[in-house]
Image 1 (tube, rainbow, N blue to C red):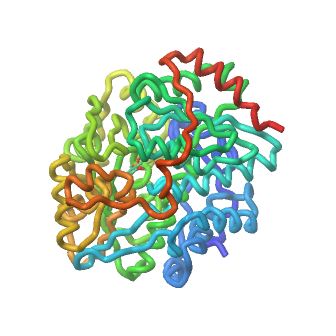
Image 2 (cartoon, helix red, strand yellow):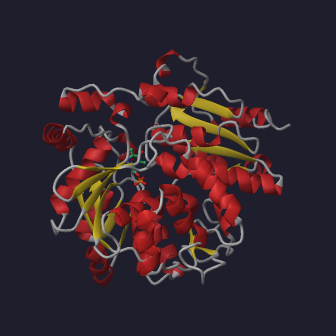
Length: 476
Ligand SMILES: *Cc1c(COP(=O)(O)O)cnc(C)c1O
């Protein structure tokens, strides 16, 4: 049974108010809305206290079914949804999917890195790949997924899409600028529908080329381009699940719970906000930034201001803009798409926008944020290793650090989200702790497998002809 029975047919609206209203499956496949906005449910289903309480006895996959069912409307049958969820999380190497480990007093680490690529992106992506395939098969359609990666997203997307008849996937990474483990996780996959492109350039060059390909309307239509990036609604939806799962294990909803979240694109922490809107008793959502601290500065000043990106030891948070923040703005301004459109247009033109004092007051009731330098991040890795015998990757360490710095009430359980396995960032972890984290069994042998990738100059025409030539490889 879904948690909320009265919502049976939720539709999706754009945050900028000018795109068509879509069913779940259409919003899933379209990613970005046609007016440049992001799709959100037209209202938040709210769950009854009793039903949230009952989650305490359920497994991760049963929780996932109950939390996600109200969002999928009539697009997906109950049987299919249940099967897709079971199948997605069978790829995780821990029976709890997202196990919780106690650190300090009333302080927990929720490990979200037990999926195939060792980062939390698998939690949503393993589900997304399967639901894409399901919807496309039903429609007899194929898509070409094109994406740019600075590391984690590419491997998670490739693992989620490999071997699927309905998808041809092309991932661009900047040649020589991702870690060995990150590159090998992408390039050692040998399914015929997976294509790795190493671009002679930076991550920004990769991302700009992908954007330009989406803006090339005739190419986009010919190839049926699609995206699985972090603005896809289904990723947010799948991430809300673990907030419920954690809270139900710590006495929620009768007791409030706080979460600390290392943040880049605001996708993960927005999923926590969604859980709160659905009725989960959350006291604080604490955001941890690295020195690319656009969000922390926003919470300090009320102004969102773009600056350059500098590389850190937590590269998956080295971002210039937090694209999912637009979904929160939409809620803050009473879901008035025209206001959001003006703000985002301003942001595009001038590199900044500001939020008024009433809105900031609203935000501060739930959110707080703090930035940590690489040195502070290393200190936290060392401190947690010494104090609790636990190795954290740099992203997870920023989450724990933010939680410790900002929690208001030591009686409220604090859950810090651990977003990557330490072995994904072995140099940083070893430098901080003196310990070399070992790759888990499933990835041993990674360094011995043959690699598949093609190197390109930063020239879109060449990459486009490669995509057109290869996208039909697995067509029949
Ligand atoms: C992507 C990523 C993040 C940031 O998540 P957002 O949803 O972009 O905020 C944090 N840690 C790791 C390891 C990641 O891969």
